Every structure is written in structure tokens, then in C-alpha cells.
Length: 285
Image (cartoon, helix red, strand yellow):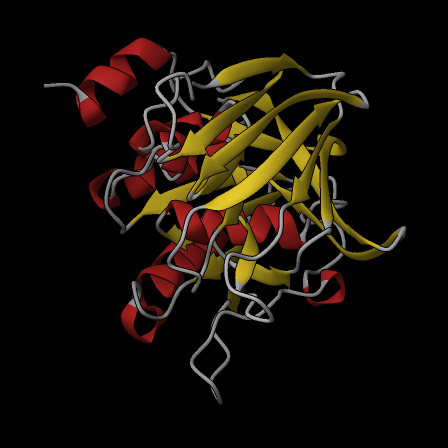
């Protein structure tokens, strides 16, 4: 590869110094590289990176920040045929695996095509209100239904392929990809899955039930969750969150449909270290 784009988080990469260093190194070694800031300078909030902002022919998108920066980039550019790789300036870094002291070696391997690609499944989520889709989004990690500012547990009716699975009283529900299994799903007591596998993991958040455990579904399953009545009349506040970024408020009777997305995210892997070793290194005792 020789054409790159860097998406950097200015809160993690002050004055884009690391991004500029990486771009300079790539260009000194025969490549081309552009730099893009994913923070809106006027509001200080995360901004969507439009497709047209990324130059034609870019083969690899390098993100600088934490896993969230890579997640945002993957969502924004889901229909572009690019490979993603992340430089970690966050915390755990399951997705953003390159350490700052490994940057030059990593860039050399990318320029020489010394890497392999993992295709990661994504989820597509739709919010349906009165038979109309009012919000749609794709995620690499997870779609979360949460009670939001309602302090009471919420009631959720879950259907699998139009057949009722059950009624849950909980703080919410997590629908996770294998890539996202080490994120909120793990914190909520859900199982860890190999990131290159294909499945949908459903994990209740603080269920008011002894039997409220995670369930693993096939990549072919379509899951629908109906939002139950609000505990307090005329007071809503429950939300659906797409990869910790896009937040949509839902009301009683709304249906959230979750299924495997058509698009996938391609992640460049520079070494052959096992997933189990990564688990041990990052979250093991």
C-alpha cells in the first residue's frame, strides 16, 4: 500500500503532532498521506468524516486515539473499500493495537504489504415507530438500549425471527458483535468471542431476574426489541446508543431491529499473536 489517510483525535493527539510525524514518515518512504481531524473545532464534539473528504484511492485509514476513534471512522466510512488500523493513545486498545513506540516499524510493514486482513462483521440497527424507520445506523461494536434518564428499570420484549423470546425487566440490553464482545458486553458479564467470528451477542444490563443471562445468536437471526410502557406517565427518556456515539431517544411501543449488516470492517493485523494472548495481556489477572 502507498496511499493513506490519518484520522486523528485532537484530544489524544495534541496539535496533531503524532499524525504529522506519521504522515511525514510515510511520504519520506514513497507513500502519500492526508490528515483529517475528527473533532469539530467550533463545538468540540466528534464530527462525521464525509466520504468525499477522504482522497480517492486511499487504501488504508490510520486512526490515532483510542478504540473509539477507530469505531467512529469505521462507521463513517463503512462503504469505502479501505483497511483500518489504529495507533493507541487511549486505554486498553483492543482495536487500536499499535503502540506509539512501534509506529515506524508498523508503517514500514504497511508500506511493504507485510500484514494480513481480518474482516469483522458489523450490526445494522433500525428504530421503527408506527411501522416507519425513524433512525438507522451501523456499528462495529454494539447497539445498546438503555433506560436513560428514567431511573426505573425498563421492560423490553425481545423477538427472534418474529418469535417471542421473552420479556425482560432491566436497565437495558446490549447487542454486540464479536469485536464488541470485549467492550460494554464484557463489563456487563457477557461472553468474549473471537473478533473474526460471526454471531450476535445479546446481554441484559442489570436484569431484575436470576435467569437474565447472555444469549448468542446466529449471524442470520433478526432480533427485534419492543420498548415497554414508561414507568412514569408522559415521561420518556430511554435511548438507543450506536457504538457509544449516535444517541436516539425512543418511546413506548418503538421497535429496535438488529441484524448483521451487509458491510464489514477490514482490520489490518501486523502480527500473528493469538486473540487469547491479547485477552490475557489486556484484561487478564
